[in-house]
Length: 176
Image 1 (cartoon, one colour):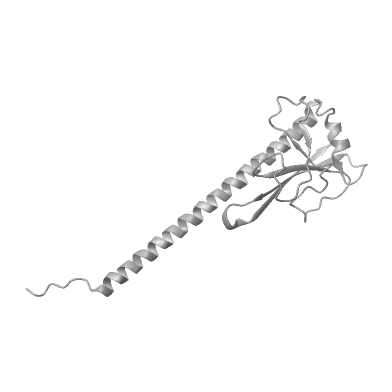
Image 2 (cartoon, rainbow, N blue to C red):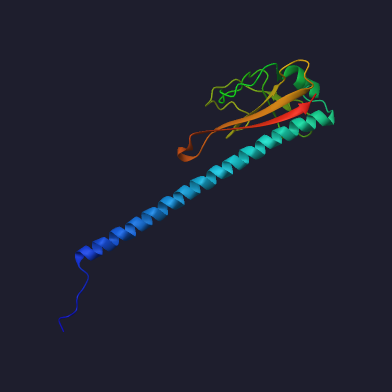
């Protein structure tokens, strides 16, 4: 019974190559899906933090509480820029002296320092009030006669993996 035939070396190598390609493809797809999921988590987190800033601004406007020695009028008077926002500059606030961040950890809206003037850091500086995502608020009023203020919340962060710099913005128009 010499009819038994085993696998040849070429058949074994070919099977190994096919299995390796399948495993490599599965690994690549899993890795890509994982990065996509992480990017979605980052965007969701940033969107939630930005909406939090919008809701805090809206709450300050409607509550009438004093903030940092003032009120909604403080934001209108000291933090509103009489210009059109620069959509080309994303890494730093347009005017750091007028840009701000509202501390969501303040005990109540009457706490001093709830509205923090934004520092003037470079794009990679760690002087931002929030660690991972650089989020800040800018208020714009094109004309002094306008009865509204455009609140721009901006975010700028380093994306995971090879995604590079990520940017996001949210705009809210509030009546003065």
